[in-house]
Image 1: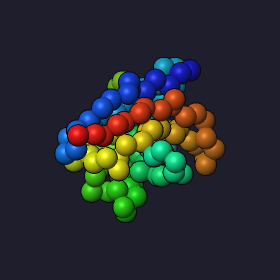
Image 2: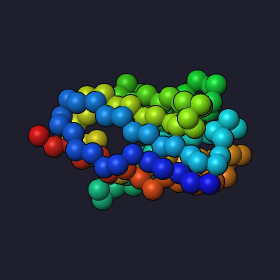
Image 3: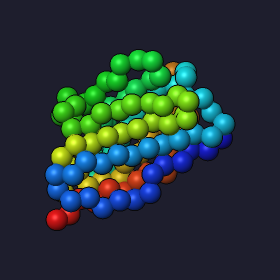
Image 4: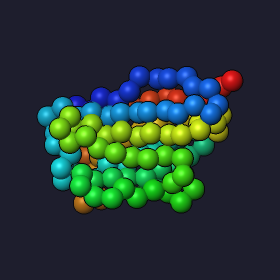
Length: 115
């Protein structure tokens, strides 16, 4: 059972970003999947969470910037960000959990936003 996340990317301000995390040997069907991020020198920030077949929930501060979707056929979770800015530069992680118990954390994707 493995988690595979997107490669690091560099974006310009105003562009969109798309991150994915895919599992091998594990079905998403009964898990909550939460995207979190950590900017340089700062703590973890919760973006939102989703479960297969359920409506995603988002941080009120980030709900207008990010959207979360799932592709159950590929066991993939997708985080899409709009109009990214330098303050969105961070390491982005996907956390799989069930019954409030963390199963695994994707290794993380570094997103750098710079002009």
